[in-house]
Length: 325
Ligand code: PMP
Image (cartoon, rainbow, N blue to C red; front, side, top):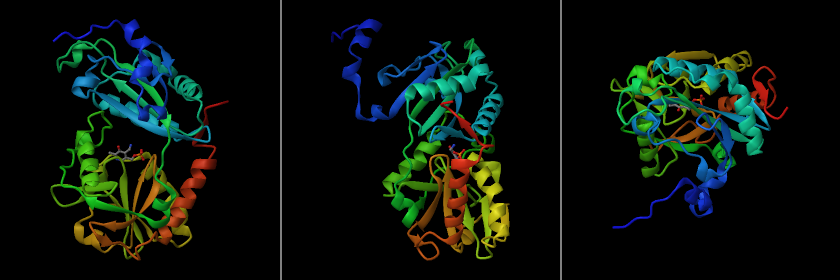
């Protein structure tokens, strides 16, 4: 078989041919390889010998910008640094300018409502598993359109299922590495089960988390129950929800918060179930494994939490970083 052999110029000249429908959401990408930004989605590439590609050897984080302001940027950057440090990945030199780079990517993308992904990879060096083959880690920053669930998901609640997928060992669950194969299997189970979200249970029968979201329950005693943090990624949204819950306790919506092991019997009796994460905020659950939760519609705790969290995202000056000023 004779296949064409292309130069970089050949491929760049033909980039329009490689455009696909999903590319319309991709706005801009910075790569430390070029120390600059591209906006052509076809050029948003990573070297194939970056150990990120063939060994999932990298870490990432994702935050959102709403109306041109990044929410909890500092918390996301601190988590990214912790993830990298756990795997022994040094931050690349240009990470010193991370906030300026993020602002440049978001501004170049032009949209005020985006998800921004920051990836720190082990870097190119070989095709082996040896991290010491890679002289420098790399930084990739991507801005793409923010696509939250449709309004009816918040008005009516969503259905979820339990996925028969193993929960990550504690060390890996707590690191936001680019090895998301287990998370992929959770979403695959959800879609195959005809729903958008699935959650997992650990080998001892305790509740863990969703593919890219945390889960919260309201007990019959009106306590907010959160799975213990040893087998899950502690979401930035979840942490903020826990802080904002104080207001719900003062106003009588809740009696308190408990971070506990949650078994199936406890989950079966809860009054409300919610998912939370960066792109969702808080999302009410109407059905779980075919069983109706509470009255089968979003409950009072969800409604109040949704209100205070959205207010926080729109107007808390301490947690918002302007991208366009
Ligand atoms: N768990 C996992 C495994 C995730 O990937 C995410 C998304 N980062 C979350 C929970 C929710 O975290 P956050 O609120 O920081 O988006």
